[in-house]
Length: 411
Image (cartoon, rainbow, N blue to C red; front, side, top):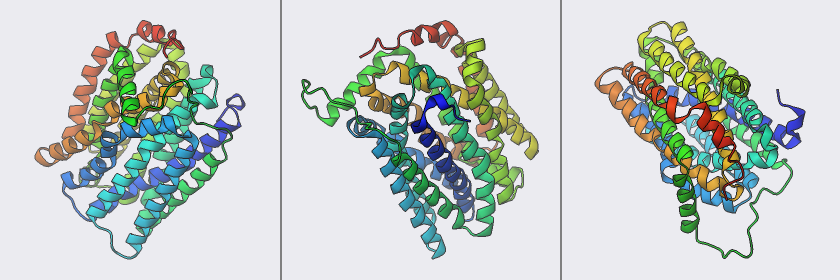
């Protein structure tokens, strides 16, 4: 699945990501199921996603600045060691019957904090591991591994383990983080951005401001960040209460809910493996437009059906545009952003892109409580349809090709 030209360091990162994402899929299936045993209030269930995504709003900029100061590989290792301890702690609380909703919120928040560091470091690390001409391929293969492990392998395993013993999924997740940390530790090289001795040392606040100014001055990347922010808000609104949709509307068991989540991996796998070739054939802008249309259609399918197989097909359809968008836009950022700024600019981008997720969790909980757990899906369908129309001009093939030609012109 990974190409020899991508190198042994990339292979280690690929396996580390695949293993930890199996654990992620196990955990993010089991955690909502655990919450449903404690409450059926949509707002309280959605609050888990709120807690998990809030660190992107609070700490993303600081995380990006630290990533540009520190060795990016070591940041990833330490983040995974921390997540190992957090998940082992949750499993211990479950085994001693001390888990509660507030505990779940704290656990989700801690995992989110570690994720801000890990993900910023991982995206900044990639251009050091592979040649820039292979970025789409490298990101596509990595996305396919991550999403297949996270959505295809992890969810059904998580559902089955939770049905057996509630603590088991979280012990598995702790183990996956530990193995991932070891594999990343074995990646050879120094991944700390070298500093120019002629440039005086600056304060963290000044470095964050530099990243903010850089992204704000780049119209295309700034617009992309705003776009994905709206998408993530609506995706979170839907999936923050998806467990209630599965239990109340589709009448699924814990194992059935895990299988339903895994259906999205079919589209995600195809997106990761084909996004670079589809983009080359029909154009990157056209690929983004088609993806947004497919996302709108998938939300209509999920929001109007009571058949779990039809809902699963809609979720599978959604996987392709999400992964394709990530492969195209992440590769573009890695080409255009100077290496010394990658952590900071990526953190600003992801603040705009992921900082809306807490709002999405609140929106999903409120829509589910006031109207129906179907409502967020129908609202998301309308929003993605409107985004597709504007994307025709904002992200046309010509616009994206001109941007690719700018590689190396920014400093």
